[in-house]
Length: 473
Ligand SMILES: [Zn+2]
Image 1 (cartoon, rainbow, N blue to C red):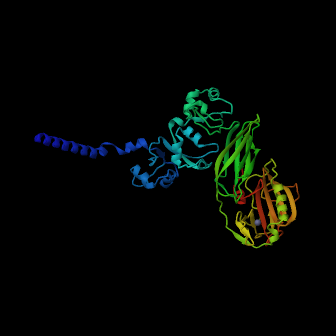
Image 2: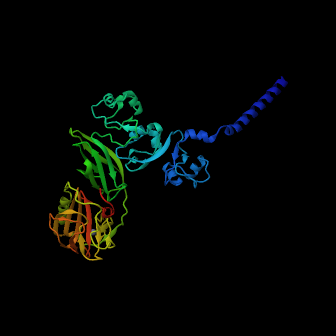
Image 3: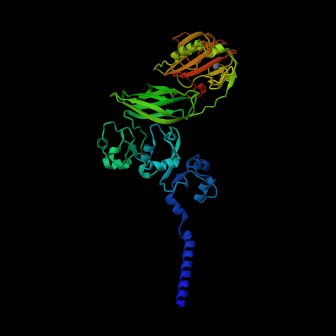
């Protein structure tokens, strides 16, 4: 018995020793790099990328990227290099980034990339739909097999999945599986669905009658202008609304529709739904919302101005505001201007007060903002038309605005000139860029000779510098 026990103990010791040895050996036998290759997605280095940007985009750190790729530093990074991205275990494919287009949502992005919404949310740290705003750069995993996924024509209310699939020459059940639907009955009208087109896919929208739609001048900011462009089928009308302001669409070049919108300079920054309404030739109306982010503008902060209390809040001022509003909210359908707007005075360094600067009056808490730019008279007193337009109104001796001139440039865009001493044009006259139209002055609520120059879009004052610096649309 004793000897048997002894042998048993020896056997146990040998067994334990083997076990320990095998544990020590395991990491050496397995190849850690290839094991990680299978469980982490890959990012292909693009021109202009830095390791820091890549780490930021995928919510990791430079050190972690270096460690997981067995690199000692990122200085040797080359375009086309394949980097494993840590922290994304279980995701497959190649990581790419793209700017969220109009019309995309979490479901459509996950269908198009054949990934599940939870992975997409994890990849981009989404906690709510509003984080999927237009213009945000997001990360996606893409597989070779998804490159040709193209959006189906929209499922219209009353149309069955079977009908849609057959019309598109697709097998309804295979199509449902591809679109992550457990049953074809769960398909929703106007939701984006995809099929294998066999060709490189292009971006389309799941709205009947609308071939494409885009938004320009991103990121949207307080006091800024935005432009919507749409390609539609014949006799389709569109309207849009953002943060309480509507944008009106007009026929533009090549059958495209274009709309201008302005964002109020005091609009609280944050996420807002851009509401788009489409009415088809058959008079059916579709609505869709897409989140956009309005960022804070860069404005000078509060200056307290001492002015005649009569010129702040009075029935006369309310009347004057209403009179001007009525003029600048009329929308004429022809775009008259071409290219960027010209500076309206000679000399470009005469800004007394910039657009959007916050101000209070006579020590009150109520915050106003400067709706235009105040230009002094450094190089003469002449005021020039910034672009082609039609003189919409001349209102002499206004309490706040003094002698006031308003020019209509079309599509809801107006330029406004205040405190003038003289006006050299007539209502209805078409003015050309650079034409002398007025003499600056000190009329109305003004503490010295200057021109208050303003650009309004559908009645919302916007930053004129943007119009001096770029062409619209
Ligand atoms: Zn001003």
